Amino acid sequence: MAALLGVCAIAAPAVQGAAFNGSSSDITDFANGSEVSTAGALVDAVNLLNANVGGVGVSTTINGVLFKGSQPGSYHEGAEPFANASFVYHGGDGYADGGLWSSGGAYDTLADSQIYGIDNGNVNVGDGYGVTNLVPGQHYQLQVFMLDDRSGVSKTFPLQFQQAAFTGNFDELDGNVPAVEIGYIGGISIGGNGVTQANGEIATVNFVIDAGFNGLLVNTWDNGAINGMQLRAIPEPSTLALGGLAAIGFALRKRLTRKA
Image (cartoon, rainbow, N blue to C red; front, side, top):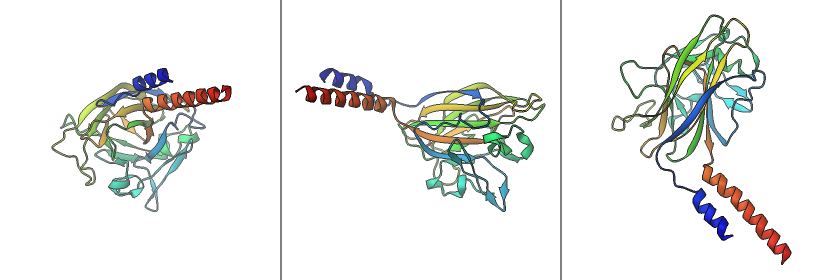
């Protein structure tokens, strides 16, 4: 038991500063959308700048995850107030067209619209699509969906991730707390190659933000476009380790009790 407690002490380091890791990969399960993560606990998911029916945003569910639509003119998913939202528009242009995706399947509705032109060429930081109401020190997983299989359309672009401080007033950033880059993924490629189910990419990143920040900006340029995002809260690795050790300790105690 003493040895177990010693391992516990080693397995539970304090979070020190921002952290980031991630990559992008091709969609392979078009029919079921199994690449949509179900790790940890869902915080929220959004269908970016989607077409609307009668002024109401169109939501869609993929692999059990609800991607909320946005009403026209709304800054946040599901037209929620800032305090309850996880995403906020912070620049970019929207484009909706059923011809963006001919592959059908689970991603059909999500792929019908996208946001592009997100990058502000006049600034080096503080531009991108916003992820809001984050808690410093909490481990998060963010997925960014980039879907476009039109024949003859090819896009290669990066994704940049900056921790940011939102004031709570729509998409306004705190001018006293400049955004800081914490992650970068280069060389993402999407676009049709002339056949159905040509291409689609999902970037999956895990991150922690610093104290003093409450959000993230996801930026892309070079014709990059984003169709949707989902945010999930992930248990800290140390918490998982402690949970496993606690289970071992309980089993060991039960076994010793039986012997006694």
